[in-house]
Image (cartoon, rainbow, N blue to C red; front, side):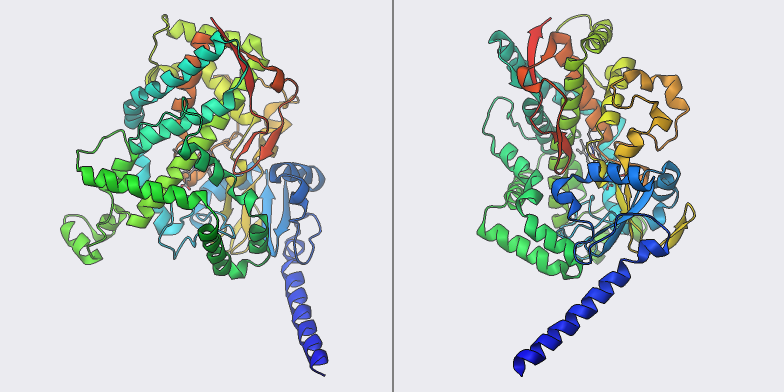
Length: 518
Ligand code: HEM
């Protein structure tokens, strides 16, 4: 009898659950948006078991057109490579699309304390972003140039050594070390030298964070399948971190120690160090909101509030900059190096431009000179067109139902930009989109192109805040490496470059090269 009652009870629960899911999954049909048929439990998530997001999106775009819908568990995601629709969502209607996609195992963007700019939304995002923006101004970039040059010196020394020993080496690995040292110096005033120290703890743990999602696939899958149980998944995540080593928690603690050390030193803030800018904005945790506002009577309340970060936000913001400063720029440079080594004629052209701007070997390229170099810019832009390595993060959640491009988007729906499809579209880039061709970025062709045709850094008010730093560091490094060396592909990087998707899309086996002194 009890067994029959239990069976009936669970049967009814399952039927209700099944019916509700199926109802939710009718949404794209009601909107007349095509897409792959979802499974009632997984949605279309099982497709990503074998394929990365960006390649599945490209395949689906071929089958269903520029705009289609799929499901992550029960959550609908509208994917689009329609540049007008993207412009509406990212730029024109930003007010209703200011939120990013909320991942199943991440902090609550509105209620948790330790939220950084990437996850924040609404007013909180506005405040965090307005504090971070000045750190990436042109003036700051000029101030950071000498610090970046110091870090590149170490890289050049290592390449010179490899050259003397006629050794093939993984340039991607070295570039990761360089970008970590640079963000450590420019971001936190730390003298790291992971370029010359193979087992650097920061590097190991940053790599650990980037690979974190792939280490807990079951937890992340559960999070996608049952998003309503968000707080359960996040608690399990932290619990696992206590039982088993978690690099995120390790880095958070180290950052906290660095913050405390810097506070105790009580020295004048260094204008070129990001953390000092944040420290000046820290809300003294001992003070109440009224006291802070009282001390800032000269400014209107809301503006006074806008100037401050909580201690938890400060720590999270620093961790965000450490990770984003390290991973993305090194990957972009690795692709650029690969293309230059694979295309010696273009490498030679780049070297000619470098030689025109820098006559001697003892060069210290700064912001103003590298920004003037036209061919370097064309090579940089074409690299990011061919390899939009952070494309999967360009997504927005609709916070208020609205019509865009003739489609009524309901509140809560995710709009995902299909950047690979845009960057490989023959409409903007001609027929040979697989070919690496910097000439696409000659000034005159740039002018006539749609503003959303090239968006490796995303678009609208939430576009990448570190764009200028990435560009400066990337270009300065390339100038110095190719001024001194000619690179050719090593035996381990012959053949087409295989890419793999993690936090970014990166070369699976690195970029192996041989260096020859010029
Ligand atoms: C080549 C290098 C880089 C690429 C390709 C890249 C790409 C991106 C992309 C696609 C986004 C999402 C934009 C959107 O949703 O519209 C983003 C956001 C962001 N990036 Fe970068 N990035 C790079 C370097 C950096 C660096 C060096 C930093 C900091 C030191 C940084 C910090 C951030 C932050 C904080 C955000 C979040 C902005 C917000 O939500 O307001 N990025 N980046």
